[in-house]
Image 1 (cartoon, helix red, strand yellow):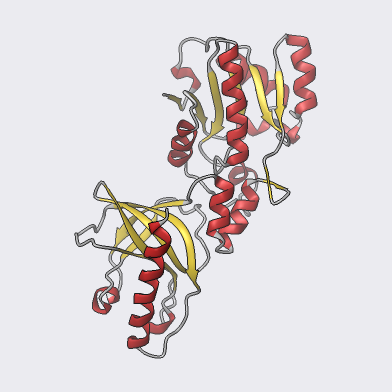
Image 2: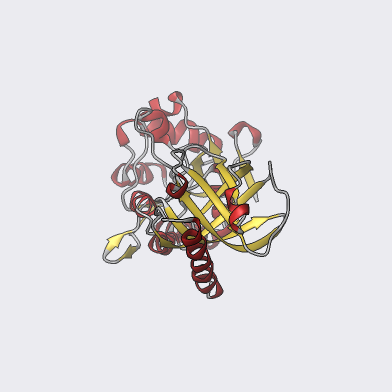
Length: 310
């Protein structure tokens, strides 16, 4: 797989390229339908498929006071695109210079100049360039003039609604992880570093790893308890995770704490990947430590039942 972070890194254009352009946050089912069509077209033309995307969401620069919470970090996006079968990724920073380009300037100065005259596959609502001038009709006009193909892929619909990154963000923020995973076509993940916490979990018999997300822009699911799997020390474990303030102990700081089943190792300072499967319950205040321990036992049983079928 080839990932280009700077187009000057490549000395030659791609062979008969077929490309798609977009932020592709989440790399969800709708995005993968675009990739599938791009791959099919590239194969039929004996060409190279290329995903042209950005290392950060464009809205982080365009609307800095209301930046989007992201579904995938740059590393996660690359991995998901690779899993979709794409062999070439252009991962550019989205800069003020890029944002100022008209659709025609972006197409000729960036895409055609560096990648080559390319056949283009886009989503049903995609547009690029200053003022979102580069819609499908714009591409059709340029394609007729320049002699390349352009195709538009219709939306993937679930529950009679087009799958979109914004819909998935809403479901995650509302705690509807199972539905979000259905829309993504895989389980939502969160990577972070383990730091020292209050260490109350160990006293309760359920030691937890306190996780600080690697990317502060990453969406954190709604407060509550979740059935999860955890990549730690090179292995995959079952676990349960709590997001919230631990109201039983009258904390005020929101934390992400994961209890990894059948695991006992020092992982302070290490990176974990948490894979979310289902939300079990709301976070709540318990009347006593004994009540909390009983609930933790029930949470573990519920998590094991969910994860056993995953």
